[in-house]
Length: 458
Image 1: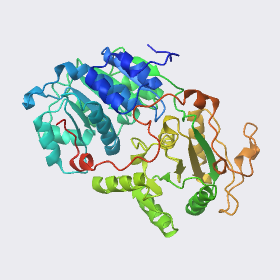
Image 2: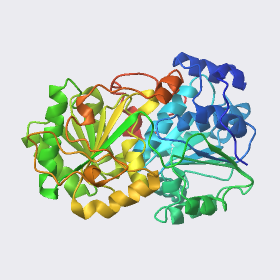
Image 3: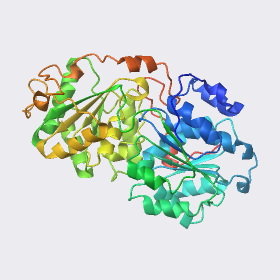
Image 4: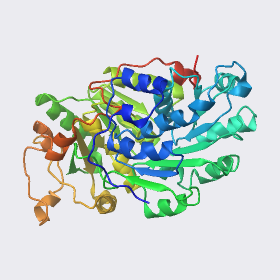
Protein backbone atom coordinates (compact mmCIF):
# COMPACT_ATOMS: atom_id res chain seq x y z
CA UNK A 1 0.00 0.00 0.00
CA UNK A 2 1.31 3.45 -0.84
CA UNK A 3 0.02 6.78 0.35
CA UNK A 4 -0.25 9.98 -1.60
CA UNK A 5 0.92 13.30 -0.23
CA UNK A 6 -2.15 15.20 0.81
CA UNK A 7 -2.64 18.91 0.28
CA UNK A 8 -3.96 19.75 3.72
CA UNK A 9 -1.80 21.17 6.46
CA UNK A 10 -2.86 19.51 9.72
CA UNK A 11 -1.56 20.57 13.09
CA UNK A 12 -0.17 18.30 15.79
CA UNK A 13 -3.29 18.98 17.85
CA UNK A 14 -5.37 17.14 15.21
CA UNK A 15 -3.57 13.80 15.57
CA UNK A 16 -5.10 12.89 18.91
CA UNK A 17 -1.91 12.94 20.97
CA UNK A 18 -2.37 12.77 24.72
CA UNK A 19 -2.09 16.11 26.51
CA UNK A 20 1.38 15.46 28.04
CA UNK A 21 2.88 14.62 24.63
CA UNK A 22 1.15 17.48 22.84
CA UNK A 23 2.26 19.89 25.55
CA UNK A 24 5.88 18.84 25.08
CA UNK A 25 5.66 19.32 21.30
CA UNK A 26 4.04 22.74 21.59
CA UNK A 27 6.58 23.74 24.23
CA UNK A 28 9.25 23.36 21.56
CA UNK A 29 7.33 25.86 19.43
CA UNK A 30 6.12 23.36 16.82
CA UNK A 31 2.57 23.24 15.50
CA UNK A 32 2.61 21.84 11.94
CA UNK A 33 4.06 18.45 11.02
CA UNK A 34 6.28 17.91 8.00
CA UNK A 35 4.97 15.74 5.13
CA UNK A 36 6.65 12.54 6.35
CA UNK A 37 5.22 13.13 9.82
CA UNK A 38 1.73 13.97 8.57
CA UNK A 39 1.54 10.83 6.45
CA UNK A 40 3.38 8.31 8.61
CA UNK A 41 2.12 9.14 12.10
CA UNK A 42 -1.51 8.04 11.62
CA UNK A 43 -0.39 4.60 10.36
CA UNK A 44 2.08 4.17 13.23
CA UNK A 45 -0.57 5.15 15.76
CA UNK A 46 -2.90 2.53 14.23
CA UNK A 47 -0.28 -0.15 14.87
CA UNK A 48 0.57 -0.71 11.20
CA UNK A 49 4.02 -1.71 9.96
CA UNK A 50 5.51 1.19 8.02
CA UNK A 51 8.33 1.79 5.57
CA UNK A 52 8.96 5.53 5.52
CA UNK A 53 11.19 7.19 2.94
CA UNK A 54 11.95 10.90 2.88
CA UNK A 55 14.89 13.17 2.26
CA UNK A 56 17.26 13.84 5.12
CA UNK A 57 16.35 16.77 7.33
CA UNK A 58 12.59 16.31 6.97
CA UNK A 59 11.76 15.12 10.48
CA UNK A 60 11.74 11.34 10.27
CA UNK A 61 12.68 11.02 13.95
CA UNK A 62 9.53 12.71 15.23
CA UNK A 63 7.52 10.75 12.66
CA UNK A 64 8.09 7.60 14.71
CA UNK A 65 9.00 8.87 18.20
CA UNK A 66 5.76 10.78 18.77
CA UNK A 67 3.33 8.01 17.75
CA UNK A 68 5.20 5.26 19.60
CA UNK A 69 5.14 7.39 22.75
CA UNK A 70 1.40 7.72 22.23
CA UNK A 71 1.03 3.96 21.72
CA UNK A 72 2.91 2.91 24.86
CA UNK A 73 1.59 5.74 27.06
CA UNK A 74 -1.40 3.70 28.39
CA UNK A 75 1.09 1.22 29.88
CA UNK A 76 3.25 3.89 31.54
CA UNK A 77 3.53 3.67 35.30
CA UNK A 78 4.65 6.00 38.05
CA UNK A 79 5.80 3.01 40.11
CA UNK A 80 9.44 2.93 41.14
CA UNK A 81 9.58 -0.81 40.54
CA UNK A 82 11.74 -1.74 37.51
CA UNK A 83 9.31 -4.56 36.75
CA UNK A 84 6.68 -1.93 35.88
CA UNK A 85 9.00 -0.42 33.26
CA UNK A 86 9.96 -3.16 30.77
CA UNK A 87 11.37 -2.28 27.35
CA UNK A 88 8.30 -1.84 25.18
CA UNK A 89 9.78 0.02 22.19
CA UNK A 90 13.27 -0.43 20.74
CA UNK A 91 14.93 1.95 18.27
CA UNK A 92 18.07 0.67 16.55
CA UNK A 93 20.43 3.08 14.82
CA UNK A 94 23.71 2.53 12.94
CA UNK A 95 25.79 5.23 14.69
CA UNK A 96 26.33 6.63 18.17
CA UNK A 97 25.59 10.18 17.02
CA UNK A 98 22.24 9.21 15.55
CA UNK A 99 21.34 7.23 18.68
CA UNK A 100 22.11 10.25 20.85
CA UNK A 101 20.08 12.54 18.58
CA UNK A 102 17.02 10.26 18.63
CA UNK A 103 17.28 9.91 22.41
CA UNK A 104 17.52 13.67 22.85
CA UNK A 105 14.26 14.15 20.94
CA UNK A 106 12.55 11.25 22.70
CA UNK A 107 13.49 12.64 26.09
CA UNK A 108 12.03 16.06 25.21
CA UNK A 109 8.76 14.63 23.95
CA UNK A 110 8.33 12.23 26.90
CA UNK A 111 9.24 14.74 29.62
CA UNK A 112 5.65 15.19 30.90
CA UNK A 113 4.83 11.47 30.86
CA UNK A 114 5.85 8.56 33.09
CA UNK A 115 7.60 6.91 30.14
CA UNK A 116 11.28 6.30 30.84
CA UNK A 117 13.74 6.61 27.97
CA UNK A 118 17.39 5.61 27.71
CA UNK A 119 20.10 5.34 25.08
CA UNK A 120 22.99 2.89 24.98
CA UNK A 121 25.92 2.94 22.57
CA UNK A 122 29.57 1.99 22.51
CA UNK A 123 32.59 4.12 23.24
CA UNK A 124 31.58 4.90 26.83
CA UNK A 125 31.64 2.94 30.07
CA UNK A 126 28.75 0.50 30.45
CA UNK A 127 28.19 0.95 34.18
CA UNK A 128 26.01 4.07 33.94
CA UNK A 129 23.99 2.45 31.16
CA UNK A 130 23.57 -0.69 33.24
CA UNK A 131 22.18 1.38 36.12
CA UNK A 132 19.62 2.99 33.82
CA UNK A 133 18.52 -0.33 32.33
CA UNK A 134 18.18 -2.00 35.71
CA UNK A 135 15.98 0.81 36.95
CA UNK A 136 13.53 0.17 34.11
CA UNK A 137 13.14 1.69 30.64
CA UNK A 138 10.12 1.65 28.31
CA UNK A 139 11.72 3.30 25.27
CA UNK A 140 15.27 2.21 24.50
CA UNK A 141 17.44 3.67 21.73
CA UNK A 142 20.55 1.64 20.96
CA UNK A 143 23.31 0.73 18.55
CA UNK A 144 23.32 -3.02 17.86
CA UNK A 145 26.76 -3.87 19.25
CA UNK A 146 26.29 -2.22 22.64
CA UNK A 147 22.76 -3.59 22.96
CA UNK A 148 24.10 -7.11 22.44
CA UNK A 149 26.69 -6.43 25.15
CA UNK A 150 23.89 -5.60 27.58
CA UNK A 151 21.88 -8.62 26.48
CA UNK A 152 24.90 -10.84 27.13
CA UNK A 153 25.26 -9.34 30.60
CA UNK A 154 21.50 -9.80 31.16
CA UNK A 155 20.91 -6.11 31.80
CA UNK A 156 18.56 -5.79 28.81
CA UNK A 157 15.54 -8.01 28.22
CA UNK A 158 13.65 -7.74 24.93
CA UNK A 159 10.89 -10.24 25.69
CA UNK A 160 8.24 -7.52 26.10
CA UNK A 161 9.17 -5.32 23.14
CA UNK A 162 6.05 -4.44 21.17
CA UNK A 163 7.50 -1.97 18.67
CA UNK A 164 10.78 -2.26 16.75
CA UNK A 165 12.13 0.72 14.83
CA UNK A 166 15.07 0.60 12.43
CA UNK A 167 16.30 4.16 11.89
CA UNK A 168 18.36 4.64 8.73
CA UNK A 169 17.11 1.23 7.76
CA UNK A 170 19.12 0.94 4.57
CA UNK A 171 22.35 0.98 6.58
CA UNK A 172 20.88 -1.17 9.33
CA UNK A 173 20.08 -3.84 6.76
CA UNK A 174 23.48 -3.59 5.14
CA UNK A 175 25.36 -6.86 5.37
CA UNK A 176 27.68 -5.44 8.00
CA UNK A 177 24.77 -5.01 10.43
CA UNK A 178 22.66 -7.94 9.37
CA UNK A 179 24.07 -10.64 11.71
CA UNK A 180 23.65 -8.48 14.83
CA UNK A 181 20.23 -7.37 13.65
CA UNK A 182 19.04 -10.93 13.12
CA UNK A 183 20.26 -11.93 16.57
CA UNK A 184 18.43 -9.02 18.19
CA UNK A 185 15.20 -9.64 16.27
CA UNK A 186 15.25 -13.30 17.31
CA UNK A 187 14.89 -12.12 20.92
CA UNK A 188 11.85 -9.92 20.20
CA UNK A 189 8.29 -11.36 20.10
CA UNK A 190 7.15 -12.16 16.57
CA UNK A 191 3.87 -10.35 17.18
CA UNK A 192 5.21 -6.81 17.08
CA UNK A 193 4.95 -3.61 15.08
CA UNK A 194 7.99 -2.91 12.89
CA UNK A 195 8.91 0.48 11.43
CA UNK A 196 11.66 1.17 8.90
CA UNK A 197 12.65 4.77 8.24
CA UNK A 198 15.38 6.10 5.98
CA UNK A 199 16.23 8.60 3.27
CA UNK A 200 17.01 5.87 0.75
CA UNK A 201 15.54 2.45 0.00
CA UNK A 202 17.18 0.55 -2.83
CA UNK A 203 15.12 -2.22 -4.51
CA UNK A 204 17.34 -4.80 -2.84
CA UNK A 205 16.78 -3.28 0.59
CA UNK A 206 13.03 -3.12 0.01
CA UNK A 207 13.00 -6.80 -0.87
CA UNK A 208 15.08 -7.70 2.17
CA UNK A 209 12.88 -5.61 4.46
CA UNK A 210 9.81 -7.62 3.55
CA UNK A 211 11.04 -10.45 5.75
CA UNK A 212 10.69 -8.17 8.79
CA UNK A 213 7.37 -6.46 8.05
CA UNK A 214 3.77 -7.62 7.74
CA UNK A 215 1.68 -5.98 4.99
CA UNK A 216 3.52 -2.69 5.46
CA UNK A 217 2.31 0.74 4.50
CA UNK A 218 4.88 2.49 2.31
CA UNK A 219 5.08 6.24 2.81
CA UNK A 220 7.20 8.13 0.30
CA UNK A 221 6.82 11.89 0.43
CA UNK A 222 9.47 12.82 -2.11
CA UNK A 223 11.37 11.28 -4.96
CA UNK A 224 13.75 8.79 -3.48
CA UNK A 225 17.53 9.05 -3.74
CA UNK A 226 17.38 12.81 -4.17
CA UNK A 227 18.82 15.74 -2.31
CA UNK A 228 16.54 18.43 -0.94
CA UNK A 229 15.67 21.29 -3.29
CA UNK A 230 17.37 23.65 -0.86
CA UNK A 231 20.78 22.08 -1.57
CA UNK A 232 22.68 23.61 -4.47
CA UNK A 233 25.30 21.24 -5.82
CA UNK A 234 28.46 21.76 -7.83
CA UNK A 235 31.44 19.59 -8.79
CA UNK A 236 35.02 20.80 -9.20
CA UNK A 237 37.45 18.55 -11.07
CA UNK A 238 40.64 18.71 -8.99
CA UNK A 239 43.68 16.46 -8.86
CA UNK A 240 44.08 14.52 -5.64
CA UNK A 241 47.24 16.46 -4.73
CA UNK A 242 45.42 19.80 -5.08
CA UNK A 243 42.31 19.00 -3.07
CA UNK A 244 43.50 20.38 0.27
CA UNK A 245 44.48 23.69 -1.28
CA UNK A 246 41.20 23.75 -3.19
CA UNK A 247 39.30 23.58 0.12
CA UNK A 248 41.28 26.56 1.41
CA UNK A 249 40.51 28.55 -1.74
CA UNK A 250 36.82 27.70 -1.58
CA UNK A 251 36.59 28.84 2.05
CA UNK A 252 38.56 32.00 1.30
CA UNK A 253 36.18 32.76 -1.57
CA UNK A 254 33.17 32.26 0.68
CA UNK A 255 34.69 34.64 3.23
CA UNK A 256 35.24 37.34 0.58
CA UNK A 257 31.60 37.06 -0.40
CA UNK A 258 30.38 37.36 3.19
CA UNK A 259 29.33 33.70 3.41
CA UNK A 260 30.01 31.45 6.36
CA UNK A 261 33.22 29.41 6.38
CA UNK A 262 31.62 26.76 8.54
CA UNK A 263 31.40 23.45 6.73
CA UNK A 264 31.51 19.68 7.09
CA UNK A 265 34.23 18.05 4.98
CA UNK A 266 33.81 14.35 4.24
CA UNK A 267 36.65 11.91 3.68
CA UNK A 268 36.66 8.14 3.20
CA UNK A 269 39.33 7.03 5.68
CA UNK A 270 40.04 7.67 9.35
CA UNK A 271 43.71 8.34 8.66
CA UNK A 272 42.93 10.74 5.83
CA UNK A 273 40.38 12.49 8.02
CA UNK A 274 42.91 13.18 10.78
CA UNK A 275 45.61 14.26 8.32
CA UNK A 276 43.33 16.68 6.50
CA UNK A 277 42.19 18.31 9.74
CA UNK A 278 45.82 18.87 10.80
CA UNK A 279 46.73 20.26 7.38
CA UNK A 280 43.81 22.70 7.41
CA UNK A 281 44.89 23.88 10.86
CA UNK A 282 48.32 24.67 9.43
CA UNK A 283 46.59 26.69 6.72
CA UNK A 284 44.88 28.85 9.33
CA UNK A 285 41.47 27.14 9.31
CA UNK A 286 40.05 26.11 12.66
CA UNK A 287 39.45 22.42 12.05
CA UNK A 288 38.54 19.32 14.02
CA UNK A 289 38.21 15.65 13.10
CA UNK A 290 35.56 13.10 13.95
CA UNK A 291 35.94 9.44 12.98
CA UNK A 292 35.59 5.92 14.34
CA UNK A 293 38.96 5.87 16.11
CA UNK A 294 37.94 8.79 18.32
CA UNK A 295 36.45 7.99 21.70
CA UNK A 296 32.86 9.04 22.30
CA UNK A 297 34.06 11.75 24.67
CA UNK A 298 36.40 13.18 22.03
CA UNK A 299 33.68 13.07 19.40
CA UNK A 300 31.22 14.84 21.70
CA UNK A 301 33.71 17.60 22.55
CA UNK A 302 34.53 18.14 18.88
CA UNK A 303 30.86 18.30 17.91
CA UNK A 304 30.11 20.75 20.71
CA UNK A 305 33.01 22.97 19.58
CA UNK A 306 31.72 22.85 16.01
CA UNK A 307 28.16 23.72 17.05
CA UNK A 308 29.42 26.65 19.14
CA UNK A 309 31.49 28.01 16.24
CA UNK A 310 34.89 27.38 17.82
CA UNK A 311 35.61 25.00 14.91
CA UNK A 312 35.01 26.16 11.34
CA UNK A 313 35.66 22.95 9.44
CA UNK A 314 34.51 19.59 10.79
CA UNK A 315 36.40 16.88 8.91
CA UNK A 316 34.50 13.61 9.16
CA UNK A 317 34.19 10.11 7.86
CA UNK A 318 30.75 8.66 7.15
CA UNK A 319 30.25 8.18 10.88
CA UNK A 320 28.90 11.74 10.71
CA UNK A 321 26.94 11.43 7.47
CA UNK A 322 23.84 10.20 9.26
CA UNK A 323 22.52 11.56 12.50
CA UNK A 324 24.31 14.90 12.60
CA UNK A 325 21.57 17.44 13.19
CA UNK A 326 23.03 20.94 12.90
CA UNK A 327 20.38 23.45 11.79
CA UNK A 328 21.36 25.92 9.06
CA UNK A 329 24.61 24.15 8.20
CA UNK A 330 25.74 26.32 5.26
CA UNK A 331 28.11 24.04 3.38
CA UNK A 332 29.20 20.44 2.86
CA UNK A 333 32.37 19.56 0.96
CA UNK A 334 33.18 16.10 -0.33
CA UNK A 335 36.97 15.90 -0.21
CA UNK A 336 36.52 12.40 -1.64
CA UNK A 337 33.45 10.81 -3.16
CA UNK A 338 32.03 7.92 -1.12
CA UNK A 339 32.29 4.40 -2.50
CA UNK A 340 28.54 3.93 -1.98
CA UNK A 341 26.47 6.38 -4.04
CA UNK A 342 23.67 6.46 -1.44
CA UNK A 343 26.15 7.74 1.15
CA UNK A 344 26.62 10.83 -1.04
CA UNK A 345 22.96 11.73 -0.52
CA UNK A 346 23.29 11.33 3.23
CA UNK A 347 26.44 13.44 3.29
CA UNK A 348 24.96 16.38 1.42
CA UNK A 349 21.79 15.97 3.48
CA UNK A 350 23.67 17.58 6.37
CA UNK A 351 23.02 20.93 4.65
CA UNK A 352 19.82 22.46 3.30
CA UNK A 353 17.81 21.07 6.21
CA UNK A 354 14.29 22.12 7.17
CA UNK A 355 14.02 24.64 4.35
CA UNK A 356 17.35 26.34 5.04
CA UNK A 357 19.71 26.99 2.15
CA UNK A 358 22.83 24.91 1.67
CA UNK A 359 25.77 24.43 -0.67
CA UNK A 360 27.20 21.01 -1.52
CA UNK A 361 30.62 20.99 -3.17
CA UNK A 362 32.39 17.88 -4.46
CA UNK A 363 36.09 17.79 -5.30
CA UNK A 364 36.58 15.02 -7.86
CA UNK A 365 39.73 13.73 -9.51
CA UNK A 366 39.93 11.58 -12.64
CA UNK A 367 40.10 8.34 -10.66
CA UNK A 368 36.67 9.06 -9.12
CA UNK A 369 34.79 9.42 -12.41
CA UNK A 370 33.11 6.02 -11.98
CA UNK A 371 31.91 7.01 -8.51
CA UNK A 372 30.55 10.26 -9.90
CA UNK A 373 28.73 8.37 -12.65
CA UNK A 374 27.18 6.08 -10.02
CA UNK A 375 25.97 9.08 -8.01
CA UNK A 376 24.43 10.73 -11.07
CA UNK A 377 22.74 7.48 -12.04
CA UNK A 378 21.25 7.13 -8.56
CA UNK A 379 20.06 10.74 -8.49
CA UNK A 380 18.84 10.59 -12.08
CA UNK A 381 20.52 13.87 -12.92
CA UNK A 382 23.83 15.29 -14.09
CA UNK A 383 25.71 17.37 -11.55
CA UNK A 384 26.95 20.80 -12.60
CA UNK A 385 30.72 20.72 -13.10
CA UNK A 386 32.42 24.11 -12.82
CA UNK A 387 36.01 25.36 -12.66
CA UNK A 388 37.48 26.36 -9.33
CA UNK A 389 37.58 30.05 -8.40
CA UNK A 390 40.26 32.16 -10.05
CA UNK A 391 43.60 31.79 -8.34
CA UNK A 392 42.88 28.31 -6.98
CA UNK A 393 44.82 25.17 -7.87
CA UNK A 394 44.74 23.99 -11.46
CA UNK A 395 41.71 21.97 -12.33
CA UNK A 396 40.74 19.66 -15.13
CA UNK A 397 38.61 21.08 -17.98
CA UNK A 398 34.97 21.55 -17.10
CA UNK A 399 32.94 18.55 -18.16
CA UNK A 400 29.91 20.81 -18.51
CA UNK A 401 31.41 22.27 -21.68
CA UNK A 402 31.19 18.87 -23.36
CA UNK A 403 27.63 18.09 -22.28
CA UNK A 404 24.57 18.96 -24.25
CA UNK A 405 22.45 18.94 -21.08
CA UNK A 406 24.77 21.08 -18.93
CA UNK A 407 25.43 24.68 -20.03
CA UNK A 408 28.99 25.91 -19.73
CA UNK A 409 29.61 28.09 -16.67
CA UNK A 410 33.17 29.34 -16.72
CA UNK A 411 33.00 31.88 -13.89
CA UNK A 412 31.17 32.89 -10.74
CA UNK A 413 30.55 29.51 -9.09
CA UNK A 414 27.19 29.40 -7.32
CA UNK A 415 28.66 29.92 -3.88
CA UNK A 416 29.67 33.46 -4.81
CA UNK A 417 26.04 34.41 -5.26
CA UNK A 418 23.26 34.89 -2.73
CA UNK A 419 21.14 31.78 -2.47
CA UNK A 420 17.79 32.08 -4.24
CA UNK A 421 15.22 29.49 -3.12
CA UNK A 422 13.22 27.76 -5.80
CA UNK A 423 9.48 28.14 -6.12
CA UNK A 424 9.06 24.72 -4.52
CA UNK A 425 11.17 25.79 -1.57
CA UNK A 426 9.23 29.02 -1.12
CA UNK A 427 5.94 27.16 -1.24
CA UNK A 428 7.03 24.74 1.42
CA UNK A 429 9.00 27.08 3.66
CA UNK A 430 6.16 27.41 6.16
CA UNK A 431 6.26 23.69 6.93
CA UNK A 432 7.99 23.45 10.24
CA UNK A 433 10.10 20.47 11.22
CA UNK A 434 9.57 19.64 14.90
CA UNK A 435 13.23 18.72 15.25
CA UNK A 436 14.99 21.20 13.01
CA UNK A 437 12.92 24.35 13.00
CA UNK A 438 15.25 26.58 14.93
CA UNK A 439 17.64 28.70 12.90
CA UNK A 440 21.27 29.27 13.75
CA UNK A 441 23.97 27.18 15.30
CA UNK A 442 22.61 25.01 18.06
CA UNK A 443 24.24 25.82 21.39
CA UNK A 444 26.23 23.03 22.92
CA UNK A 445 23.86 20.81 24.84
CA UNK A 446 24.74 19.34 28.22
CA UNK A 447 27.15 16.47 27.87
CA UNK A 448 25.37 14.26 30.39
CA UNK A 449 23.69 12.12 27.73
CA UNK A 450 26.90 11.54 25.85
CA UNK A 451 28.98 10.89 28.95
CA UNK A 452 26.51 8.55 30.58
CA UNK A 453 25.17 7.11 27.36
CA UNK A 454 21.60 7.45 28.52
CA UNK A 455 18.64 9.55 29.55
CA UNK A 456 16.15 8.67 32.18
CA UNK A 457 12.79 10.07 33.07
CA UNK A 458 13.10 11.50 36.58
